[in-house]
Amino acid sequence: MTAYRLETGGIIDRERPITFTFDGRKVAGFAGDTIASALLASDIKLVGRSFKYHRPRGIWGSGSEEPNALVDVNGAGAMTANNRATVIEAKDGLVARSVNNAPDAASDKFAYFDRFSRFIPAAFYYKTFMFPNWHLFEPKIRAMAGLGTMDHSWKRSGLAAQINAHCDLLVVGGGHAGISAALVAARAGHKVILVDEQQGLGGALAHRDQGAEFDGLAAAEWVAASTSELASLGATILTNTTAFGIYDHNQAGLNQRHRDGRPDTLWRVRPKEIVLATGAIERPLPFANNDLPGVMSADAALVYARRYGVVVGREIVIASNNSSTAEVGHALAEAGARVTIVDLRADAAMAAGVKHTNLTLISGRRVVEAKGSKGVAGAVLDDGTRLSCDALLVSGGWSPTIHLYGQAKGKLRWDDTLQAFVPGLEVEGVRVVGCRRWSVHAWRRLHHLPRLARARPEGSRLDRLPE
Image 1 (cartoon, rainbow, N blue to C red):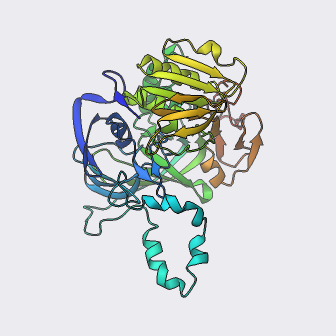
Image 2: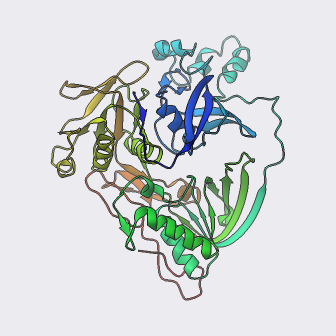
Image 3: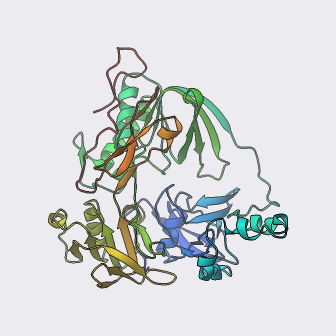
């Protein structure tokens, strides 16, 4: 991957450069960068190793769905292990280290494990090391299984704050659906808490549908106006905050990260009602070597381009089975990259939306293999064609983020059109709304998953949600 930083654009503050280290190497960035976006801008593609075989790993996503870029962080008043580099803000002087390797991700001495992968299948250690005594081998095996490493000499200054709160409505997710739900409740005089794990509200509106309008306002203006209105109505807005669980009697657990270096704050919230507007996660596609550094979610690449001004490659192939990648291809082509979209659909569903001199569409074909050793160097199609590329983006459709719904004892149902599990039955006190879905075949507009909103008597906990 040959990534580069655009001269303009994004939420970063280019007047405030920062420097931190990753695996002992100095990395430059700007205030507002995440560790991941700064690494990509510095063209650092290998950021970790797989747990068992120590295969090279690169950045896949842009948020909490990230499976690969785990780092131990020391600096800014905190030392924590196994952080996702995609959600940790880069700070001047911060020290980040990749996990599960020695001495670092780029030159891991355990990389040779991959050569013996056929001899060490799942649970081989329990079968192999029983003789003469499992306990002779167990300590060493366990020592290799912790990923991150804690510095036991580090002393935390102060205790993490804990807050117990009550509200009429807790909204998880600060995208269009979440903001709309919070506005309806706040305008009706209800006490509202709105949480989102990103640095600001907006969700996908921060990087998609740049020309969309809501209530006569451009997307960014609508988000800013809605945020201001919610604050004026007394709503509590918590950004950089992850809702990690829903427990008995609808108690929700929230982890709030502070940008000033203070320890995280634990919120225990008991709302009368919860709205989950947590959006969707882009699915990968199966092909050989689809775990190479440089293989990335197409939506994540759009996030890095539009939020952080980072283009993830100069020659980019997008493997897709849906039309959401048309916007990704156009954005990266306009940023100067040469982009080829490989759409496995034989029809012309995407053709009308692909119009740029730097953008090529190949229909009816699919990627079957990624080429490269420590990073993507090409892509092979099912007809044998080899495309040169330094980044391979994939989009296999979208799956609703239903984890909190499931934890709240929600039952799922299979949706053949989406090829995904979606919320099935109503859970008392919990409603799922949103998200802007992209199916395998068509672009879908904002709607409920499922439509759990129903009219309630005046003065009840929540009168209605936006349709």
